Length: 268
Ligand code: BTN
Image (cartoon, rainbow, N blue to C red; front, side, top):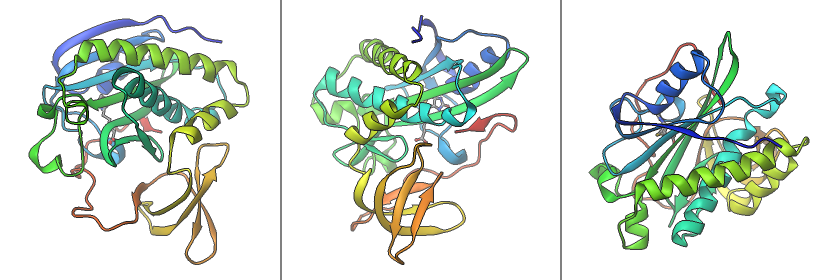
């Protein structure tokens, strides 16, 4: 079992806490180094999108150096989602849902996004777990208000970002200890399934970048990939993609599309 000893480095403004964590990891930074910024000028989202990073959000990246088979590394994104979900529930009494693989929703709107990336250097492989939480309404640009929400909106009260960061790191330490202790990694899958309505029986469409698949979710593969029983009757295994719950929506675009990708890092 691995215990995380956090060391926090804070910035008022930075390009991206993930990018900074990656710079530090390449310089040999140890597991447990946390970068937190009040705002980001080049916040990164999944699939090369940008992440809106005004004041009022929590922007946090953590360096991990897990001693696991590389095939188990993608499960860290599910581990992080479980940790955020618990921290939101314990701190604010919210009832979060996890949209596969790791979008945290409250009231069916996105409250948190997670971007895990790996990098290799002479100091070995590091995993950067980047977490962006909409704490106050100021974190959200107007065009996102329909599809995203904030802790402030959901609780009707302002929330203390620093206090929440502490609770979140505590939750990550707990879930990471579970992750490293469990050789088979079945616990992280079970934890995720217990926290996500998307795991089984959800009508969804998935844009994999190559095709759009529609069907009903049928649980997780041990790798963390999602089984979908397609409307065609064929079972698909989704390893990456943007999931949408199939229901009438006012606005189906999830985030602002933009290319912003590091060439020598890999998104999980
Ligand atoms: C997503 O697209 O849902 C993932 C968003 C991840 C955003 C966080 S904010 C902190 C960290 N730094 C970044 O540049 N991105 C992640």
